[in-house]
Length: 196
Image (cartoon, rainbow, N blue to C red; front, side, top):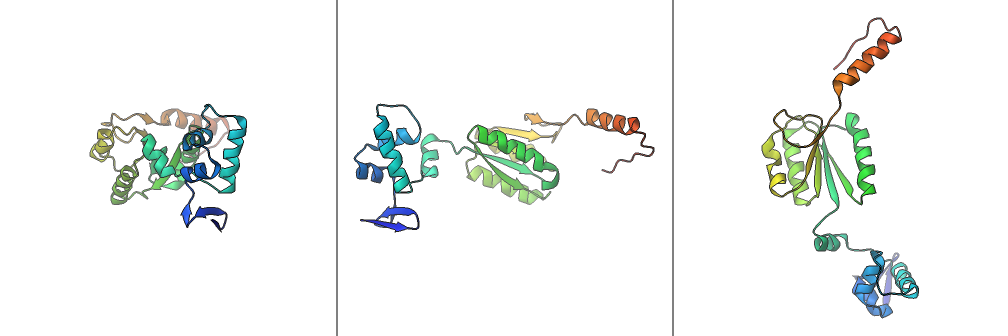
């Protein structure tokens, strides 16, 4: 007997699993998995529709943790920034690209706090992220040695250290400042100032 808790149907208070749905509709779990993952296989359009109807009927959602364990990937990327105001556009751009490739972006902000930054880096390792994007005011290579040891790719935003051998994405600040000054001169600004 099925019990409806909200929209999620269960068997004996257990959430529906692929094998439960397979038993209910008399289709193998492998076939259901192939349909869910949009993998071609030896199943008909009628079988595909039967699976999709059952998924909808039982409000089935995949167990992401189990799927990631099987794949040995989390499809999560960490991004560590020191503050939101300057880096929000960068985050939004990174999020758009990550989504395009099927990754989730986990955002963390250190607020320029060295201890908090270390805690975030440790948390990201525990979450088994697949990659890290970082910019920091407290660069120390030893922070990131564990990422290198675990073969987790790291990319830095801006030049975080002259000693760092990590791949980086940075601005050409010289070119940007030259462009700003040229704009000010061409538009007859008399006393430009720079506040850093």
